[in-house]
Length: 245
Ligand code: GLP
Image 1 (cartoon, helix red, strand yellow):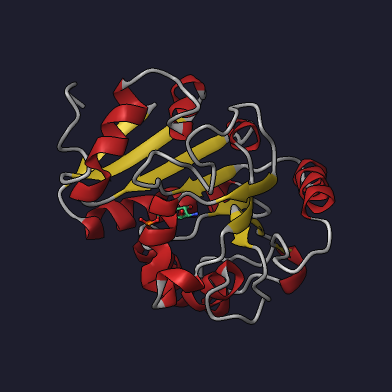
Image 2 (cartoon, protein in one colour):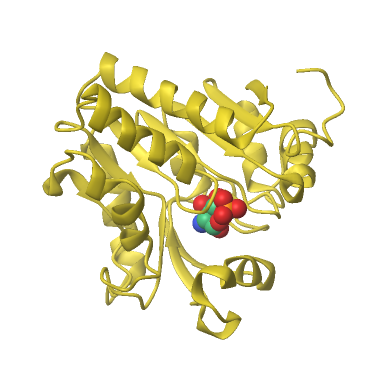
C-alpha cells in the first residue's frame, strides 16, 4: 500500500481526482468503481469540475457501484443510485448504458449478486476502485466477520453502520437493514484501488487496517496484500498511525 497524508480534506479530494483523471486519460474506456458516503464527495465535485472546465471525457467510461440498499428504488432520494447521480453522474458525459448498479428492488438478491460479479468480469474487471471506509473498518458494506473470500452478496448492516448512515435518512428507523455489496474478494481483484479517509472518527479504523493484522473483523485489512493500493488520508484520519508515512 502506498500511503499519502494530506493536510486537509480539500487537498485529499483534489489528489484523488487527479489520480482518477490520469487513469481516464491513460484508458478512456476505464472501468471505474464508485464508492458512496460523504468522503468521496469532494473528489466527485472536482471530477465534475474537470469535465466542465477541462473537458475531461467520460463518454467511454464504464462504472460499477460498490453497493446498494435493499428495498430502495433507483428514484428513492436515499438510494446510492440517486446519490451518484446527484454527486457525479448528472454532471459528466457518461453514457447511461455504461452505468451499472445493484438493483435494490430485485426479487432474488443472491442470484442478482452472482450476475453482478459476472457483469464486472465481462467488462474486463474493474480498473480503478474508489473506496471509503466505515468506522468499523468495513469496505463497501462488508461488515466485521464477512469472509474475506466473499464475492458480491446480500449483507446485513450492523447497528453501528445503521447509526452512522442515519444522517442521510433523517431517522435510524428509516435505514434499510439489508444491502447488496461487492465482496472483499471482488474488491481484491480490482487492478488499482484508491481508498480515501478523512476525519478523526476514522483514525482507529485507519490504524487497524494499515498496521493491524489481516482479519475478517476489519475487511479493509485485505488491502495489505493488494499489489496496487493507494490510500489518501487527511491528518486527522492518519492521527493514530504509528509508522512514518
Ligand atoms: C457506507 C458505505 C461505504 C462508505 C462508508 C463510510 O457504509 N457503504 O462505502 O465507505 O459508508 O462513509 P462516509 O464516507 O460517509 O464516512
